[in-house]
Image (cartoon, rainbow, N blue to C red; front, side, top):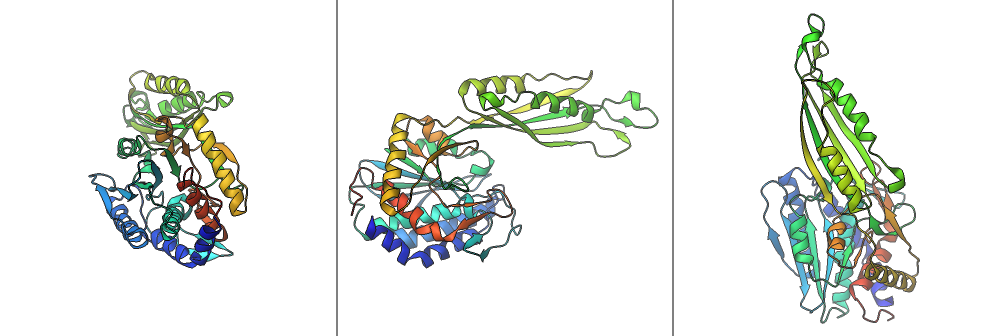
Length: 379
């Protein structure tokens, strides 16, 4: 690993430049044109650094998904990542300050993708990829639940020996992510009956009043002891202060640690009934990601990561987290999956989102060591 970390340290300025280039290609999930432009930038980076072209999975609504294959060995390592972000174009500026790089999606998770590209580049430069097959699966819609990429990811990951997810490390500790909650998204559309709030309020049926009842019910589904969270993150209703509201909508996020809890929550939400006479409800949604659990094989992968990190010169632990990722899908397939192998930093989905520049070479080297599989990494 000494040669690998030395190579990455020598090229740290180029790695940082590539990160800035990818971050500058802003890519809000629901803006297909912008996401595809970012995909073009990613394709150019990988062609330049690794000499491989993309297999493009064309999409109508979301950005196109990209697959890159390096080498032709019998055992396949998948590097899993996404290049869409939660930020609208122009919402955050890119800036470098006090050893940190700030910008939209820099931590979640464009720096992780670039670090993985350079990890593979380091191995290629040292002729360590002979007999190995590294596949980068880069989705375009992870931040909205991977509605168009989940089947595509599962199809191309099937049969892999390991999956390395280059989502960001745990903030503060730099820990890897060995387990994640399953996630779901739901919407409850409420229809009432409009009326003048002063002249004839008794003729109306308030969708906003119904919304209040349903928010209380939904939050009552929380069960901290089971690790279950139900959050109404969007509550919108009405359009005039002097009108009994005839429309309202709730957007709901769910997090669970088991399939049993996923079924309990799904059933409870889909069977919601109106509290007020005359109200109509339209309920849509599903549990979009299964829980990611640490299998015996994934534990071995975590232990290998700790051994590689020790050789590089740092220590790393594993941690369970509440957020979901595309690693949930590959873990559910029974493939050894390790998450949080991307950049270190803080501020995921927050305006202070940033990475720690000094950690870039070591985190890239960690991914390189894991790409080697069971090969000797002591050199």
